[in-house]
Length: 119
Length: 111
Image (cartoon, rainbow over all chains, first blue to last red; front, side, top):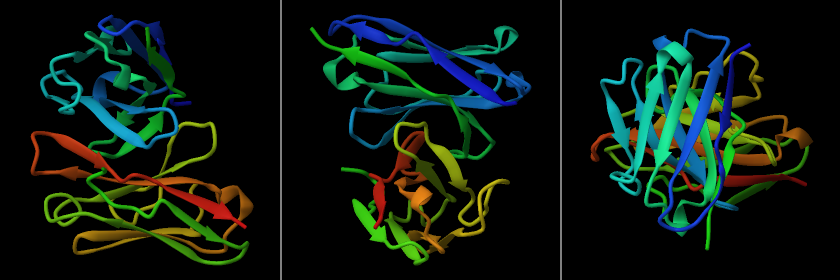
């Protein structure tokens, strides 16, 4: 079964840092591009970042560029999102998802991890 | 303000057919595929339609997608109570440096 499991969310103060992880199983992780999408409480979906299978192509939403960094470790079947200089508006559930070769063809999605930025 | 425009809400009674619209521009829907996602209450989004009108395996044929020009639509026929969810359209936007854009979402209520 194809599965994605996020972890690493929590409460952090404005200006702080957090590292999210996404553990993949049930498919050849190194063959697929991956993405992060977030959803603020009670709001819609917002695409955050994309990384190709070999990490050669990376995209970011304007709202996070320079503060969030996507990376992956194909040997560990894991995707990461390093979050620095966090702002209150970064508060959201963060989902990782597999890209099926044509943005935004995302399937499946993980269950999400909640990041709360508050003092 | 989302790049893709969806009605915030839609409703129908069991058995009815409902459609949800998604309006964009030449840089996104007009020149790229449209995708639809279903988000049931308290759960992660799920792929519903890909490449404008294709259904992943397991998605009932009650769900269908279409695209014309810079707009797209999701149609749900034979509406069922379990279809009550939020629905999002998405597309690649070629006017920006590598951006995926989502619609604001439509909350479907089954009356």
